[in-house]
Length: 173
Ligand SMILES: CC(C)(COP(=O)(O)OP(=O)(O)OC[C@H]1O[C@@H](n2cnc3c(N)ncnc32)[C@H](O)[C@@H]1OP(=O)(O)O)[C@@H](O)C(=O)NCCC(=O)NCCS
Image (cartoon, rainbow, N blue to C red; front, side, top):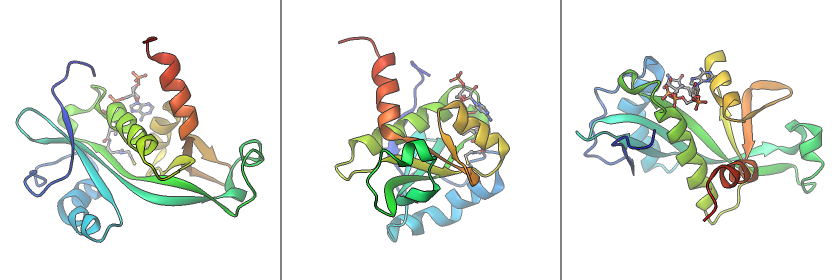
């Protein structure tokens, strides 16, 4: 998506939310009717990609979460401390307006969400997402997420794995 004119920002009151159309009525309605209330109550933080005309081309939300240690694949769980839960960041929603789909923006928003989680001073072991359908499962698997063995629509990505992949693909300084 390099060279595209999107600007990433925290959602603000001035951003036009009404015309957003991702093809998912639930995700559009959430942006239109619910997200500002969730931000006010501090249950979600929303970030948007704006095009040159300040139109919302895509958005995602983040919130603190936890994963049950017992729900993780055994080979990952055995490397973690024996606390009942593992700290995580929930990617609550991710959507791209139909007009901008298939141009790399969804991948760029996901990378921004992961970078933002890595930058946080509050530790989180992984990003977790509840995929809404099988296409969403495929999207997250494509980006390296791993399904929970007993709950295959819940997927997670250790932030250290994202960091290692990002470091190995970026040119040496
Ligand atoms: C899913 C969605 C966010 C993807 O955004 P997008 O901008 O169209 O996707 P991108 O162009 O950034 O694709 C990035 C990569 O993911 C891949 N990809 C996209 N959708 C995919 C899918 N359903 N399954 C597997 N891979 C997928 C692309 O091939 C691309 O791969 P590459 O980087 O190796 O070339 C977008 O289509 C959307 O908003 N859909 C409606 C809402 C939705 O389903 N949200 C899912 C979150 S619950």
